Image 1 (cartoon, one colour):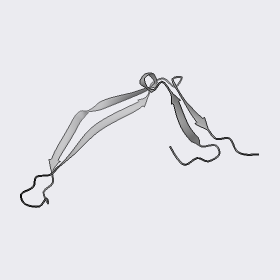
Image 2 (image 1 turned 90 degrees about the vertical axis):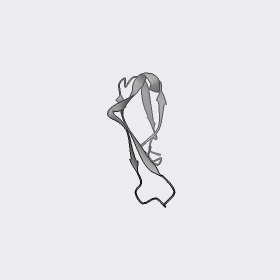
Image 3 (image 1 turned 180 degrees about the vertical axis):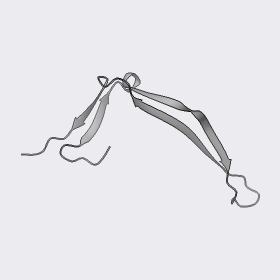
Image 4 (image 1 turned 135 degrees about the vertical axis):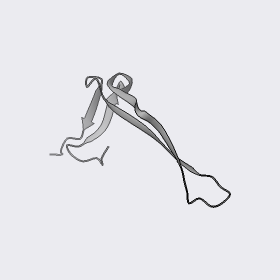
Length: 69
């Protein structure tokens, strides 16, 4: 969420289990070695591909700050 300012979203509340769905990507997890590691050590980088999206907009609401008068 961005910094609080008039007209900007500041808080999301609701049933995230029902309203938002996280999906593992087909490629799954990728692990690759670090070829510049100090000799005698083995270091790897691991990435996990995920996706997600809103599936029920009625389950999650976003609160905004109103402008001061």
